[in-house]
Image 1: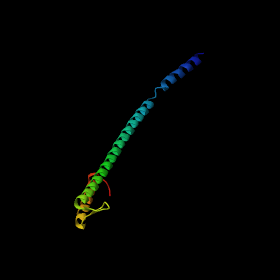
Image 2: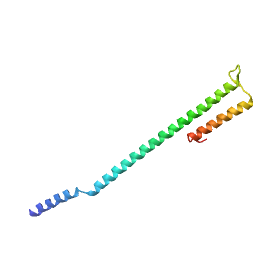
Image 3: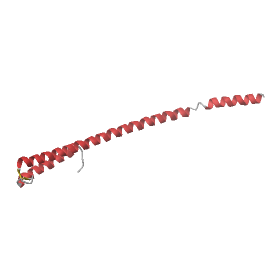
Image 4: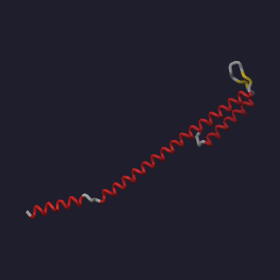
Length: 115
């Protein structure tokens, strides 16, 4: 009888002591830290994607403005034809075409876009 009581007491003591494993707390802290790091990286990635998207939109708007100014230069410096086009002398057209190219290159530099 004493042996059974002693065995039961030791078993109960072992169960109580076994539940206090400090490794579990350390693992929980590491998991929490890793989850926070992942959330921070996701947030950083989202911000970078939004920035790249805004740069792309700004670049497109800049190129559209360069094209619009080119068309306005054609209208202002040419004479309108019956078919809706414009007649312009070659030297003037070369100047305004180069101006358009320069504006688009400036857009590329301002908005870090490739060719």
